[in-house]
Length: 94
Image (cartoon, rainbow, N blue to C red; front, side, top):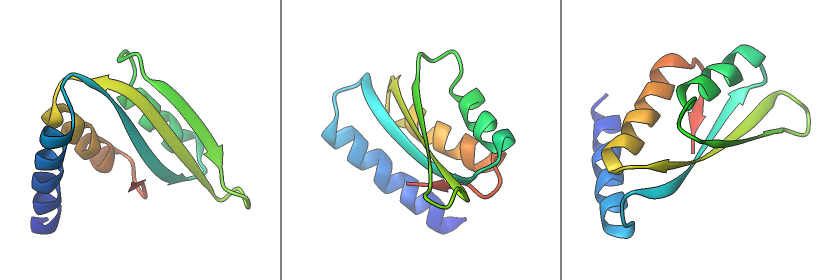
């Protein structure tokens, strides 16, 4: 858990230094190709005006979910990463 907190601390600093807020942010997740898991991710970003793009891997085992959404600040970006990690089993955040 300590490693993830350190990661989020670095990410927060990078986001604060490199972007003017609010700004569009691109999330990328990889999940096993299961409709329930993909829907879980989409529901987390529901009502935010997100543009969501899905792409299945060549063998169909995994699906890449890209979400482009306007976020208010670095903390809001990180909170969404944490929410996805907590709710969607087997997700990989890129």
